Figure 1 (cartoon, rainbow, N blue to C red):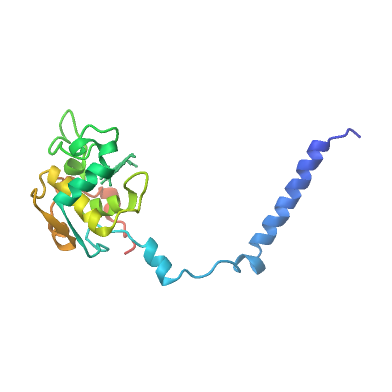
Figure 2: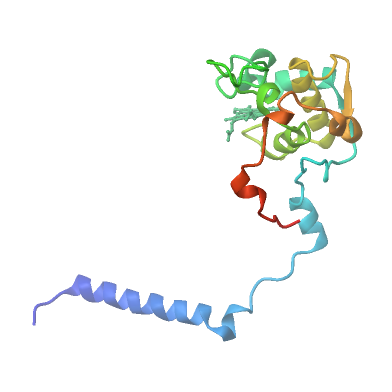
Length: 186
Ligand code: HEC
């Protein structure tokens, strides 16, 4: 018989892997791992803010504070005043989306201010997502909205005032008829 050490080796490995798989998925073993997450663990992960404002925390922040923070932590990627950086442009382009040269920014595209808060708190700054406090996230949202002319330069935002804002492109979104009849889980 021709010697095939390598083939034999991998056949053995295959059998061992299969045996492990059978064991791990067998009814006797499969349910017996992990534990229920504690309320505290769930609280740390459960930070999403919905378009209707559900999940917006207490706290507040001013445009002035947002400007300071932006220039320290966001400027490098998003540019001075949120324009001309190496990453997404955040400011301007309002009313341009249907034109020949659409400019997609927070001001021109985003339908809700609430989800701007959500996105910044969860995803930015890019190198340290989740590091911003709630107050600082309100401040940064206020600054970006002020740069877009959506709030005044001396504004202060909290959950109530953020929820009241109507973004310029709020009515630019509609539900595709194909999906309109679907029932989403609440
Ligand atoms: C290291 C680079 C970097 C830094 C610093 C950074 N960002 Fe970003 N930002 C990005 C990138 C990349 C994206 C696009 C991410 C994607 O599309 O998945 C983005 C996207 C965004 C968007 C969404 C833009 C859109 O219209 O889709 C916002 C808002 C934003 N950043 C805010 C901030 C704020 C506020 C800070 C400072 C706290 C910050 N960013 C710091 C790289 C950065």
